Image (cartoon, rainbow, N blue to C red):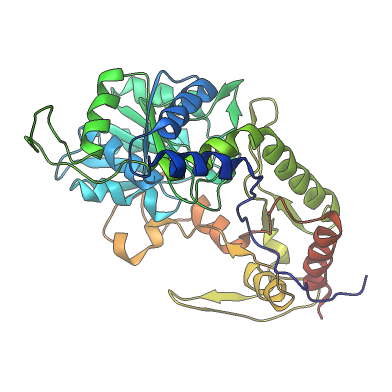
Length: 403
């Protein structure tokens, strides 16, 4: 196959719109409900409860806002240690710091690339006073949620499930976003369902959600004037954004099917290369396949050196590395990205502890550093055609041929 540059950029994951979004946005406009109250917001909260099977929800301005309010509900105070997934975007962890908490990062296991329950148990041995755990479902693949829940229950800790990337994924037949005491979903522009922005906080605790709803609107009291007895935030979702989410939700199953087809085409098209796809156990879970990721076999890695701000590599025939593939795809107008850089490697969090299944220690061999070194996120846009994906696959294959 002759490799040619794409005329139109192939994105990692961009919004897929259908037209229904405009109907609900126009309704907000025509009825003049443009702010943080309205029918669309109420509908989104109801849809999220129905879809996830969680009793209560509050629609917010972002998934990060939802995580922040989850930290408050979980009782995180200044100086409290909180166990957090290490392999994630910074938005998972930053809300801990907003409340003055101290993150302790937990290594992943290889079966799902999510928080390792064995490492979590080890962390409780080292820090038995911890009472909050924040666990991510990375790239739309559920963590070992039953095992994580069991460890949290054993130690009397609150689980916050960061399902920002996993709306529509299920674990043992149960939707993600329903396993934690508090659960978070994101509608950021690149997610499987988007509102352009926005998020939702879910819980079976109605009083907790009522508190979060109050905090999200500047903690205004029920009084004829603006009365405040506690700190509040401007975190409520707008009725316009909610219109986009409301119009997207009927298409979630279609989006998931498209994402799964992309994943399967990559797996088939690259099966004879020294690579594997981001893993999952189909007997336990069904991901939403938000992003398809690649892990290069250790023996097939060409030399690659990364600093905090850049990277170099040395090509070798028959070998490749994530940065070569990302660079080659960019040359042909397709977007790929590195795996999330683990939090324990981030300069801002350099003083925070890191726990693996073998114990505490930043310098020891660990799963997350290895996945970051050898992994990358492939173009996973559900508007990518089969022919376009075939070309992406051919570009990846060319990286291992040495030209």
